[in-house]
Image 1 (cartoon, rainbow, N blue to C red):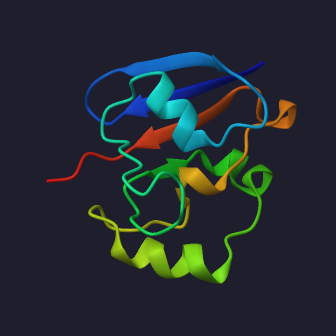
Image 2 (tube, rainbow, N blue to C red; image 1 turned 45 degrees about the vertical axis):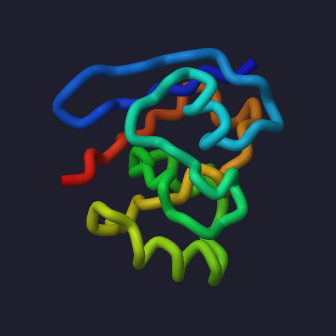
Length: 106
């Protein structure tokens, strides 16, 4: 199991143990993380699982492919250099301790 922490901007932190092999969007939904909806079920077609990765973890989450890059232009909250769609990051032991910031749409 891998420990992940979601920081809800201006609110609270949610931490939990996540089964390796799940994606971060599935993990967020399982831990009732607000503002992570995953409306498309992880099919990379809605951008409702947008998160900001702590900069020191960004490289560990892997590269952003062209489709994710395009979808990140459609997020409700402005994209940052550390933006990822959480459905595109698979949980692995290397991500133990990962910290994600969950933006709150206006």
